[in-house]
Length: 333
Image (cartoon, rainbow, N blue to C red; front, side):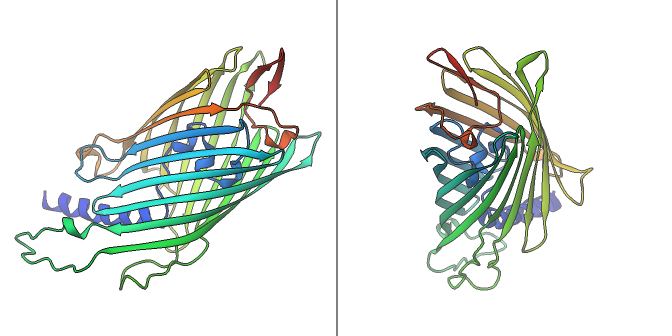
């Protein structure tokens, strides 16, 4: 039992480190919200898309990581979009809050073959705090003398590229491109926060039924400081009706890239869009030594699409086949 407790403490510290390096990316992006991953998706699709996400990790373990986030993006010009991300993250006695302001511009590489290229940039403001007031003496540590409040604010940037070729997509991001100022901390605080993310996939349609889609995808994260990397392998089935409403079901499998046969977690997910209101749920089952002490990770996404409109530029249309009725005309989205 003592070894398990030690393991849990070390795991919490490790994920606390990862927390500040980058907000945890689980399966929120699969809830039809690619903007979670990359600023390059701002302005693609509906004029205004709002998603509210709540995630609770390792349910059953005290002070396990917990995250809430709000994402919104919309077009401001025929080929440009902006986005806003607000987040609140808790991991044990650490607190992280922040905001991202994003801009994306989309261009046509080839109109006939439907090749598009998007550029994205995010400006990030992040506040990280350790709740020293929660530190209490124990039998092993009878005196706790931490001192003043431990908090720091950081500014950084994310940059990204998105390439689309008909129903194929590939995005690449460099996140936290600036080194962190660590003057307020001594010793163990990491200063290099740069990490890379790649997201790719293809949408297949049923030849006999264009309202059915199959979407395999992969998401790769690489941390430049210690060379850690992980991959998600995903699959989604999507079914539309004649009004543009749809539902989808899928699954995700995550593993460290040097341990691909030993998954970190995997689980099912599902979502539905009805009259421009959106709801999705995902469950991730932990597959490691922590599995006996928690019931997995749960994520819920709710949202709404507003001010639907079709841009004059096809570079702002998504890769998914979604039809809107506008004066009796069907448009591909």
